[in-house]
Length: 429
Length: 169
Image: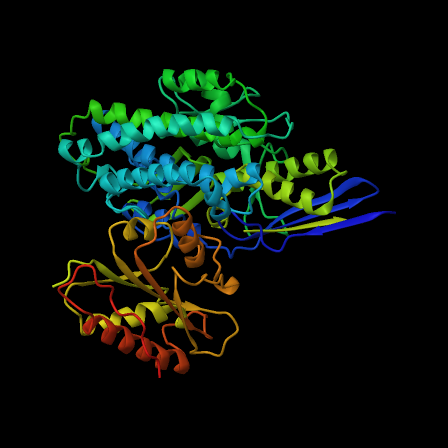
């Protein structure tokens, strides 16, 4: 029996700490394990007994890159439990906040974490020597996204201005207008980044995925919608746990999700794009067509292009919202505690983020469930690795290792989120 | 008074023992501040540093390091003359390390005119709020040296570099 072992102690350019083991014998992949050893963080546990008003601030601490997503899923869930619905300008302001997060998160990943793979650089630092302009442009766009989050959310990281019912304080028209010219510049720059990413060399690797994302009748999804898939699923968020389950696997501190107890599924930009293409703004669809992209894309390596298109979408929407901004009458709706169960599912940059809370009549959290997108993608990542390695056994260990790391980075995993960094071991035995 | 903009930045984590070294240096400097100097304490020395440097002439950064030198050893680098080593044990998977940011700044021509980096070799990086004795001593030495260098800098001539050739006992 011929054996082969490849080992990477720490996978770089992902957020968080994890390991990967792949065993190959007799020219077949026998085992793939994505081991997340980032310590478990127990947020679901220590939310118990806290007041419902604390959920946005506590859950925001789960992630420094996508705190707005946690805040949005938590406030929507709480508001549903309390029979409250946010509409009008307050709802629009929440979308604007989410735009800011998508912009900074997507740009960081595209330029600083993912692009180096396609150009053969060890990291973005090395890449910046030969491509300073694109890195400068990316950092400037990211900064503008951070500024938008800071303006509406009160702070770049772990925003402090979000509450159940709305916000603590509203931005003025003048404050939002101060960002408008920068956002317009960033929108043009983001379009150039789409064109740039579309020229990158991509392996020919397409899989038959089950894509899962939110869908809304009128808009590209952020905060609200039904959960749909390309295999016919169409459910409200309150039915999420009927169709999707989590289990603990021995090799990971993060629970793994599956559909119907066993099947992997795919969430994130590629899923949203494939399921909501026609909701993208005209400028985004036109740019996609210009790059040769239509409504369907099933190559995960091309997620960098899709992410760049979503970045353009977020920037375009931010400009449009600010152009038409009328401040809400009140910063927040009045909220009174009452017993209930609420469900929230919003589109974090990396995919759907599901929250469920049960609160008692004093407004204290009885139990909580949080399912991040990276948890949901774990099984799919392992499946991709299995398929990719099977198709590329002829590569030497060094090259195959790098490609496997790239397969993981296609998903922009946020391992800290998943535990409530990657060490790759390829064992060719 | 010189119009030169000078920042002293301490980077670290107050809950990880010696990782607070940079923050402690700045805390001590703020107890006896020199007029016109901006003092900052940061928990993350990531990409935000580049934005900060865009509007700064001279920067002194202090951070804890772990590279195998004896605890308390003081490293000093001039970013325009020396390569900043990457200290693997301080690498974090949650952001870019200081060495990476400096190299990125160099590649993008976004380094301040003067950039001095102090690394204090730590030995305790567990959870806790105490500095190890050797690091505590070095924190005092670095804080005193930086204070003296800033206090005695030549003022009145905007073209004058601050004197950062500090003598360490």
